[in-house]
Image (tube, rainbow, N blue to C red; front, side, top):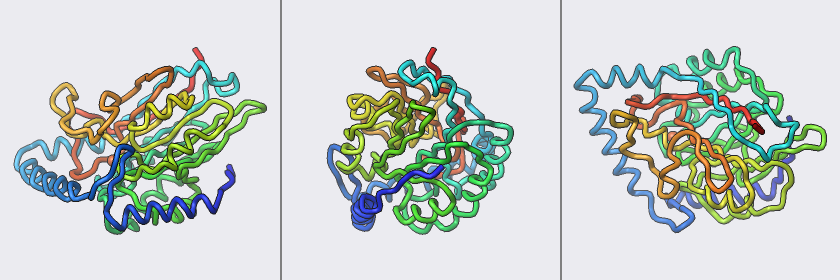
Length: 309
Ligand SMILES: [Fe+2]
């Protein structure tokens, strides 16, 4: 499906994103700071992974990370037009394709025999938050080749991603949404889908303007993290799809997270949630980052079905 692109708006976005990236400046909606804490977190992960390799937990956790489940979720969307009742969205998030070895083949295997109308990807394609990204292009292409969606593939960037990826991804047939909205039509009925740049590290007011723009039809937002849930709700969005947290990735027994990497919306760190008439889904993610291990969480591919009931 071909969605129109506003080239001028895209150029303004990439200029702002490159300034933040090149100055290592992290910007959330309530302010910004230098990203030195990422270096500290990476060191913490390095030390943690060393100790994890001593016991059996590394092997068990790596097996867990490769055991991707297909999570089928009915999403209550009573305001959605009748024409989209039963509409299926394949939701992938946090692929981190260069972390867990062979992940792309497992994903392709899980995608076999699934049918859906649209695929959305909510950011984080590589493991690290900086450096090169070419290593993830071949595995991503493999995954994209195994996706068959009538309405195409829409995606946003996460905090691990760079603006430089966008042209390569769009050559693969992914329509990247950088604070932009596209519409999907069935007769007179419409879905308006707004994709935002990563709210956790690269928030700018362009995201707010994208949410505030007038649009018709049932409004869905794609963002890397759930941190803009209230802004989306107040602007009439009915569905918010995101990831970022990995469901905690390495959790205590009972799935209790140690880290969620959220400043706001912490209670929306995993699964289906509701806020003020809007439904949200926070994916636990397909891949892992930092260390290719999951404990007490599941890697997931999500198949969402919009339901008016
Ligand atoms: Fe991630």
